[in-house]
Image 1 (tube, one colour):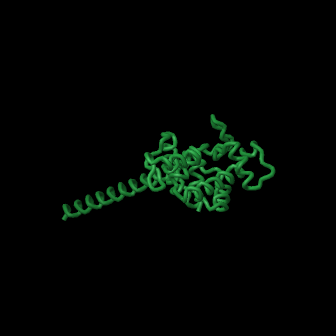
Image 2 (cartoon, one colour):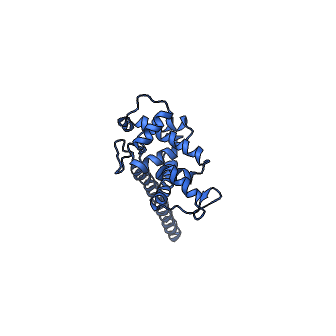
Image 3 (spheres, rainbow, N blue to C red):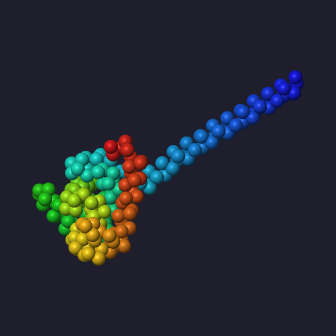
Length: 199
């Protein structure tokens, strides 16, 4: 009789220990998942969600794509200037900015306005929309053109050694190839991390 009681007590202790271990494991997994999301949000920041969603909607651009381009172009730094002179969040070249301003009938455009997040993201989204039309929605070509210029992409498409049926089989600029991969990775991150903010 005493043996049975002892055995029951031991069984209860084992069940309690296993239950406690499982609860602790679940808690640790949840904490790790939460901290992973926090760490990823520090890397893939979203500093201007309202501007990104508004401008993306205005020009029919995927807001997650716009956020990914901003991340890859400037790391969300509105004051960024590249070594070649590209400016602001979406790294608009001043000449391209002046051309876009003309298309948007912006009479008050100056190069300094490219540092304004709303102006810069408006121009960047308009430009992505323009490239999407020009390259028939092929996102690889759109991103290649955003990085290397539409003129280069057009030349590549006319070169049978690196293109087939209106698409590129090879991207001759390694920097552009890396850029496309980087934006695609960032796109997946923004899609995962900012569903609420960018939907």
